[in-house]
Image (cartoon, rainbow, N blue to C red; front, side):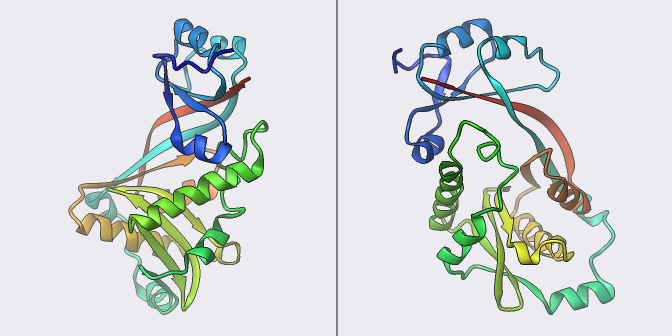
Length: 236
């Protein structure tokens, strides 16, 4: 087995940093690409249309990990929603806020256990500690780039939303604040902030299995598009 790089593979540095061994993403789904990838050691990912024939993947030892949905909303979609106002908003305004000041260690603690729907936590061949490290590293990088908004319930850190450009790329709410109807107020504030920064749309990518987050984005007027099935394998 060789570690030579194939033209059909691109390195996945985020995954390498967490897993501690090579990680790759296939650049196309074809018999030639899969055959070439057979000779390259490491964790491999392929993303493809849910309606694509998966026969070749199974023949080469790939297994299903997740289905991702792209979400997108415009200012017009946001305006078309029922306003978050009246009694509920006035009560929420006294409870929830978004800020740029936070304790990173406390935020990292919220990461742990928050990404059970993530494809690496669902990958039975990946050490859960390595999967958790992947999200920790991601949050650290976003925080270093000043691309994290802290979510507060009164004066208590309750979660975070990390973004890149107009995309919400990493977010979590602490367990004790889930299921209380607060997330829609935090998300609305962050979405409005990004739109006011000059973006025409706000996007995200979420797991189709995460019903709570799907419902949250639906309440914010997001459309869902471009589903992708994610398959993994490890070549030794």
